[in-house]
Length: 154
Image (cartoon, rainbow, N blue to C red):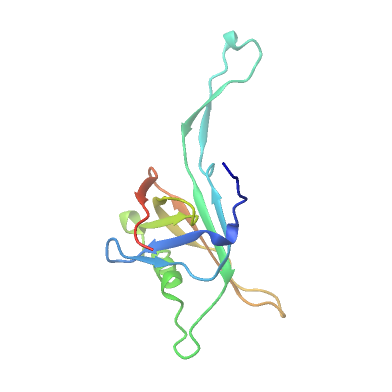
């Protein structure tokens, strides 16, 4: 079996629109970082029978997905691209409690299944220096377990 290095730039990220099962691509990303250990909690289970060796167990799993790119807006309307607009909507200050949860899915083109998370959305820092383009970033923090769905269509 041939092995291939995976291009980070090929990752596909989509956010669920406010219509269930309608997915919008999150456009023009430069960095996509999955952190499978975010919010992981452990407990020390070392006792006298451990013979001086530290022991632990994982009590909680977590994960996050960080998205970064340059800020982009429509020349005539000032609107964000649809996927980014949905991410910003989900990160809105009025999204509290269960309303703060949305879904995102992601995969590499070679994957046969989407990884789907329910999570909370937070916007990151935006801006830059005099000769920079403005940046855009968001973090989705997983809430609950990961689900999967088969990739369908082309």
